[in-house]
Length: 241
Image 1 (tube, rainbow, N blue to C red):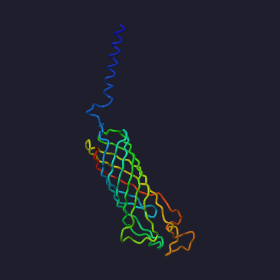
Image 2: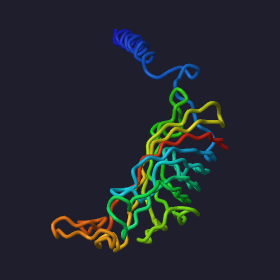
Image 3: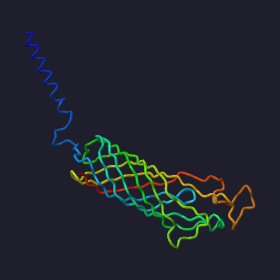
C-alpha cells in the first residue's frame, strides 16, 4: 500500500511538472536569444553633433564626425573600446574690443581630432535578443581643436578652443545582421569645459559702457569658464571577429 501511494504521488508530481516545464524557457530553435561568439569588433562610425557652443557660441558645435572604433570583450557583459575620430564643426568668433553690435561674427569652420576610451555594459550580456544587443556606456576622451581657418574674421580676443579632456555618457543598440556583421546606433552627450580669455571681461575699446551697472563686456559677470558640449548621434557598421 505504501509503495502504491508513493508511486501515485510520483506520477502526480510528474504530471504537474510537465506543463510547468513547458512554460519555462524556449526550445533552442525558437529562443529569441542568440550567442555573440566573437569577442572583438571594429566599427566605422559617422555622427551628427549638435550644441550651441556655450553661452557666447565660441565653442565647437553643430557638425559631422567620422572615425573608427575598436571593441574587445573583457567580461560577459562588458566591453572596452578605443575610438579615433575627426569632426568638422563650426564656431563663432567674438572680438572683445569691437562694438556690441559687430563683435560676434560667423559661424566659421572648426576642426576637431578626438581620442577616447570607453567602457560599455551590454544589457543582454554575450547574447542578442531578437538580434538586438542594447548597451549603455561611458567614454573619457581628449579633443584637440585647430586654429581658425584662413580667411576667418579677425579675433582681437585671441580665444582658442585648444586641447582638453571630455566625458561622454551614451546609450544605444547593436543590430546583428549575422554572426559577424552588425549596425550600431548610439546617442551620446559630450561634456567639455570652455575657458575664456580675460579680455572677455573687459569693456570693449570700441564701445565702453558709461553705466557701471550695465557693462558692455562680452562676459559682464566676469565668469570665465563653463561646461558645454552637445549631443552626438552616431551610426556605424561593425565587423566582429
